[in-house]
Length: 371
Ligand code: ADE
Image (tube, rainbow, N blue to C red):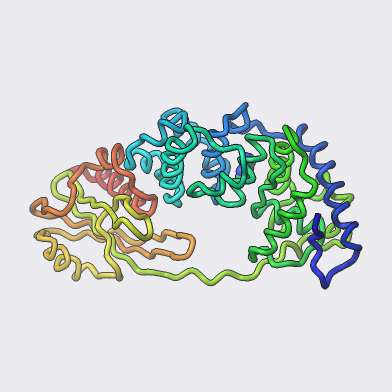
């Protein structure tokens, strides 16, 4: 097992750091069964259920995931049903969860599993890593949780726990730090049921005790007697993470084109942000109320009323949309769009959250201002 202590910080010999991790593993395995939360994907799950939950839990909070997970599994209980689901239905089940490529990759992988693996997930981290949407973290999580293999699953929570435990000042934004932590952990991973317990236990520790920012709960931490950061009262100095590039801001104008009770929607391009999902027609730039009728005319629409709908912001990973919305009452339903009532849009079209806020606004306006 390699030491994860950086070369320039050696408060103890590397071997002692390895010993530290081994002691920590024992402590986590003793602590975790007593505090384990009975989350839906922890009730005798199949490999498929573990896979779906781990994909949903990427970048998404547990509370948000639970209702999506339950609904998804009710409708798509196995690899075969996932492989056969129409894309729009799949995206509808994912609507609001964000990072829609996760859903597309799930289906792609399910098709591949049906074709090449008899509809089963392979019991090997290396094979799992070959599937669309499965990287090191998810492969390790499925391998240990579903198959009892000695494979760590290192996410931001686990990086925080381990870098505090070892007072490791390496930048966790760097891939090589993740690799070193994974390798060090792999060297002391148990097999069988305990492998899954350790994976879950480390996650649980990061999610409920070794909290980020200013609030680690060292008083209830099973590792406090071992933790180097705690011993030095430097919990908040770890993990070290280099600053991300700031998010780019983009101005957008959202056109709520209405003809009678129906609104225009269209499918977004097949590549790029929110690819293939549906939208209210959205254009680049912040147009004024005076400018939007001319744009509508380009779509073949005559506008008899423009009602500004205020502004809204939506944050993606690398971009922030600053949107201005206009309700445009039109004299006809021009081609090039689908025209549907808010109820129909809600029921059948995957509309990302960025546009949902506009739809809500319209429904409210209708309720308060009939006709
Ligand atoms: N975060 C990622 N995977 C998780 C899991 N299986 N349980 C709780 N939190 C998680």
